[in-house]
Image (cartoon, rainbow, N blue to C red; front, side):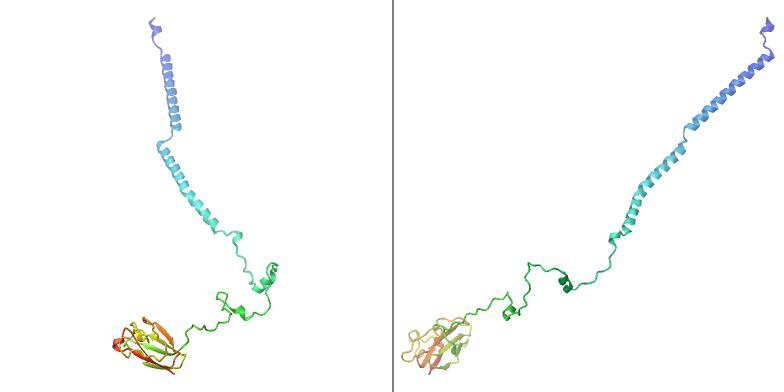
Length: 244
């Protein structure tokens, strides 16, 4: 009984071989699993480098894309289309050749070949001179003076005496800065000797004459006329007209 239960050398050797084989298979299985896991999971550093490279590629494409479009646009602008090619200059045409080539419009009247009358040279913008005859002077129009007498700032008539013929006119002009009168009316004199008229002559009076004013009187009766200035009668501002 005891001999059967005791292990034999052959039996212990087989047991050792089986254990080694089991350990070897387990080791191979572990190595296979490790290799498989290492091949399927990416390396963190490699993944990071790949991501950075992809991002750089994306950024490069984004930045360079407008530059590419700008270059294309500039190249397209530099190209000259066939329509913009300048044509050679056309020969100049004189107005006579143009008018000869154009057909005559029947609606436009032909230019008259008749000579232009002198009246056609008048500027149409200027008013035409009336051709009506000038009427003769009316009886009431004052005739042209035969003599002119000035009234000065020194309170005198210049000249003091003038000589005319019957029917002629004398004109007085106030060339001073004062108011004067030409008065040949005895009723308006206050100093003796201021007025003297020939028999049958009519009196005259200019009234107040401002500077630059004028007065005319025609003498129809021969004789000597003495007149004065009312504002300056006291200073003996007097004048004489002799009618022959």
